[in-house]
Length: 281
Image (cartoon, rainbow, N blue to C red; front, side, top):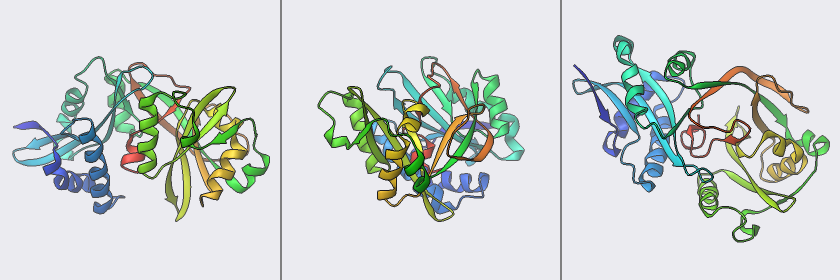
């Protein structure tokens, strides 16, 4: 008999081993570190669980991680679902994990890195699919040819009350998690841009994980490029709609997608507290 069990902090090692089995390109240490960051984040929200196991007796045979947060603009709860894996012998019961995860109709659910199989199942549960591609920008070049529309400023320089207090806390937390946070001062508005930094072929590469739009990034590409280079980062990746063009860049990967169930502003880049940041996938 298969059953479901919440993954509390005492089960993180078992979760890491199952994820290592399901995603063998990542090491056990990779999953151990990521699950610890996820558990620490969830604990601050009063969430004792990092996801759900599918159990065959006392053995975990399936897993789905859940990363919750609160949207500072809409106030709605967002749960990022990630790392869905079920051993082959039990895949006929894989949908049970998704049914359990989607129990709250008022929550917005996202899957930012679905496999093809997961995307097909997600669609049957009402997820919308946004087709995307990823471009690579070489920052020494874009610092010269990129647009220079607005001024950049440090998070500490933002006038009190200019950015929602909850969002300011989120930005500070992401900086603690190793992200680079900057503010674009645009016509009396203060627009955060957050970059997650991870090595690509051993070279630090920035990925935009939060911005009000791709246009904001491209309109300030020269300044953002210089700012990142001063921090030792020579490359940046940016995810855009499948049909979009992106000047001064090269196509890194296409045929990708992310999926959402619930209200979502597709113009916005919003991967705060996601698997990109906490799991580093």
